[in-house]
Length: 339
Image (cartoon, rainbow, N blue to C red):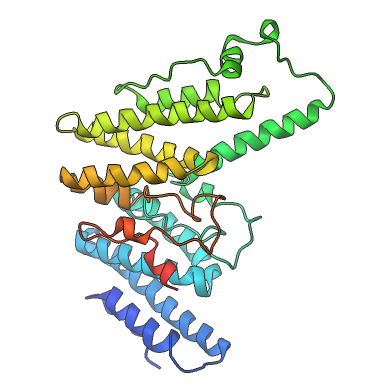
């Protein structure tokens, strides 16, 4: 059978192959389905490689966009049908992209759209014990977009391990034995101040000093401290975007803090974030900040937290597809969810 994908409209050709060779209506043996997908996937890999690296025009923006779009489609299907060949190949693709110093494609397409190896967040074919592919993205000054929520979880698990290692050793809880920061964390009496100058670092400092503590803090105090930091983050993001016309620097600051805040909210409790981000989206679109909408909120998946981000959800919970379907966009993970 013919498994041809052209350079003119590769996504359309790929989707047609998936529809006619893989997602067929009649009952087909699993081995045949897998073989047809593997052939389609091989054709997709060849075309992506050609679009990116084949000739002197490989840096052409339209070719790069076609490669990124096809890569996204292929990855979504690979997560469902057969992720291992994709996971092996995408490392070779990354290395070639970086070797040729195609840094805009690396940052804007592979990293922001999370087109690295499939893992348990994307696919039922992995279990929860798989290591997230953090190292894949840790190149050319980048980090995995999902690193924030994993970082919070890792810090807390490390602290829990240290607490267990202490055994019966007493953890200081009386004011005279505590550091100044720990005493404030225990009381919850602090002012959460975040400014426009360095909002991400100021937010991280607040979380480190008053939330990620090594002492036992009553649950209600801890929750109130998380909420206080979140409120400060939301307020400064709003000011950065909507106090006058935001500069590109202001938009970048807002997006970086929004990404960090979403990661924390996904770990501590996503409900307030999920309500607020809809309000933020509507204001962004009303003010026609379309680059921020497409490049930051959509590409970085900064919409409502879901099973892709948080243990508060399971696979039966619906994905927030509707959130992203504004101003000609769709959820970056839509293809995978349709499978």
